[in-house]
Length: 114
Image (cartoon, rainbow, N blue to C red; front, top):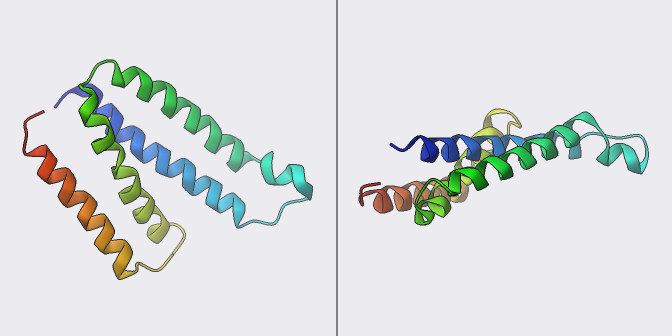
């Protein structure tokens, strides 16, 4: 596997992690309006978003463009896993069915060799 495809896959996890940080911050009570946006979790999440954007842009220069959107769909899978494991959200059958369809679609697409 191309090391840049692997990088893009890892970056999808970090994208999901930053979304988790934003959700954790949203669930907290903050002092004033600025506290909602200027706290450690939100700032860290946006720094991660920026780094993911920069690294993803670089990785796109090294891989075939048709693989990017396919790899990016794994963000949904990671968000589901993190929400169940960290936020203790219920795993609903429709969420699970959607993620199974995402993985099945990626596997079908992957039948064509990278």
